[in-house]
Image (cartoon, rainbow, N blue to C red):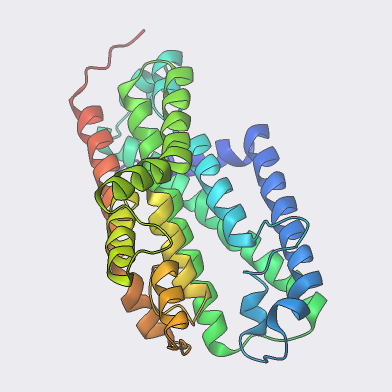
Amino acid sequence: MKGLLEIIRKELADSFNSKRFIILFLLVYMAGIATIYIAAQNIRTAVGDSTRDIFLNLFIVSGSNMPFSFPLFMSIFIPIIGIALGFDAVNSERTSGNLSRLLAQPIYRDNVINGKFLAGLAMITILIVSVVFIVAGLGLRLIGVPPEAEEILRLFMFVIVSILYGAFWMSLAVLFSVLFKKTSTSALASIAVWIFLFLFMGIIANLIAGAVYPVSQDSTVALVADYDSLYRMINRVSPGTLYAESIQAILLPVMGSSSPTMMMIGIYSGLMPAPLPLSQSLTLVWPQLVGLVALTAICFAGAYIKFMREEIRST
């Protein structure tokens, strides 16, 4: 633990004093407020005569002119924040010569990378918690309906899952920061992985599943179910899919399955879904949460091992 707290304090101070992060934080706050304001304007149309989970629906509803809900906004901005926190965590220190001078102090080498990761995780936590509190307060002001106890717990779990999602992208960026000497290369590699997983992973999964189980309008329910199962299994390679499935089940209590396709098949078959308690919703998404934690651990373990083994010379 020697030097760990000093590293964390230094990284937090650098982040709070950085214009880059101030601008990113302001953009996140403004986008979050905009999505909640639009949701509040359309909340009456979305919920109809229902009086259940009105406050929770505020985080789900999107506008007709701008189909941009709060979870979609978070799924886009969280990777950007995570990458911004991690892409230059190590190689910028190495290039400037600060890393060799830092390790010349009585600080253990593992505390350097651990401190940088923990400081970044703290920044992600501060951002997500603050933006959720801001939009929740604004939503309460706009609709005037206080949340119930289970709605508060579901928002808390939404925050936890969002932090795990941000931790993965930061650990991936830190891994590239250790592997590549130039900050521009690590930033481009992180963004390239994000774009590939966000835009192309679904297309690849659709092509493979469609080739194995070709579906059409006349396909049987069993064939559609097989196609959907293979598609989702392949697409779960992307942490974005794991995050989306998790927050769908957490913010939508009526989600009795992580697959919207299977939900629609059940509705067409006359099986109307009943709202699930929070415990069953968490059981439903437990594999996705474990997957996010595992991916984060793999990326950080790779960065940790590479950092501990590399030679660092003074400049």
